[in-house]
Image 1 (tube, rainbow over the protein chains, first blue to last red):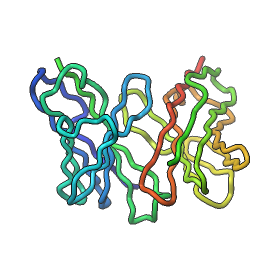
Image 2: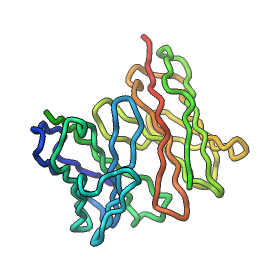
Image 3: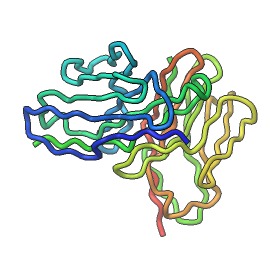
Image 4: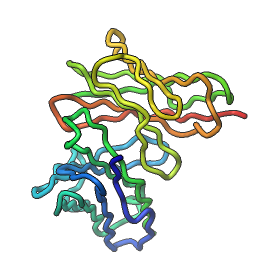
Length: 119
Length: 113
């Protein structure tokens, strides 16, 4: 089945540094990938939609200069948390849909998430 | 745009008991409905999905869900819960006219021995 690989699974960084998270679709091409943020014991909050070859679409309230998204190929999207602060500590999850299987009724396939801790 | 509500934040059941997790959606046309399960510190795994046909769908791990258009519901059920089913469950709704998918707030399932 479709697999999405997310790396790293956890990262600790110092305040003010930047962190890059990678999301790869391993056996399908994903023109669109989604980035979510999940707070403890809460649902997934869609941060942005990553579009291959074009700018990402950010949800309202998400700082695009803070959370840089690059979707350079059909199998890779990256999320860079710039100048990280402790309040950015969270669980970040990416997902992708294998549109080769159909239309929007295709399920999303999720990475295993990245636990970011900013000290 | 579509939306989904999971009324129960936390449910506790005894091992071997039956389970039903509620999900209500809002969307003007036929929705695409999904249930996902998330273990602590992990991503989400698809349990089952519905977009047409038989309104009772079977999924993995012995789960099933029934689409009821009249009630705008897609409740998840399992006849006999196992301790390994303890996790967070998310209902999600997609639509035929956009690439978006919206998630409910999730229901945390605790299984008592």
